[in-house]
Length: 276
Image (cartoon, rainbow, N blue to C red; front, side, top):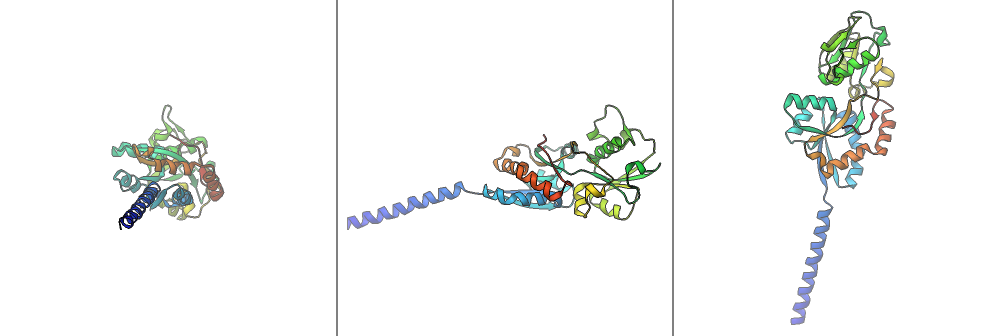
């Protein structure tokens, strides 16, 4: 009888040990879910591309899409998101300044070259005196617009001005008296272009691609690849060092992802090296 009891005890103890080992093994393989806010195109598409690989590494992406540039940073600051992917560094810096924020850049991924589109002229140099250029109300993009116009020889920006923070008030020379209207929401620019408003319309690449435009073919002028406006993964300060965030950035910056971006977007979205 004693042997039977001892044997039964040993069996139960053994099962307990095995169960303990199994539980320990499962806990070591836990997945981390990252809530990440993103614009529909191309950000959410790129995230979906890397999601399967990240899942193998224990990181599950929950992608929440946004239609504007206002809510993603607010949601991140309010801890409704773990990260977001929609903006460039000058935009982030400007948002932090205006909102007393402390969001940080966790790593650069790609450039969406902003472009000028027109149904009235085929080149910026064809713009007549007094022509009207329509720009969104995203002040962080004004420097990009001015840089393209300056490169085309149509304007000159005041000396000593940081182009990434420049505004239309910083124009020193404007021989053709170009007029700028910049009160529109970024997502409306493609509709404004379709309506043939203004002489030229400035459109962000994500909205252009989403509307079926090909920036390389349809834009009359396009931003250079050397632009500082690289789209980044943004997080709250300190979270950029979390293992799951590092895995996310590594996956987005990998050679295979860069190749996929090149192939999928055919130059309309450009993979770039990390920018801090």
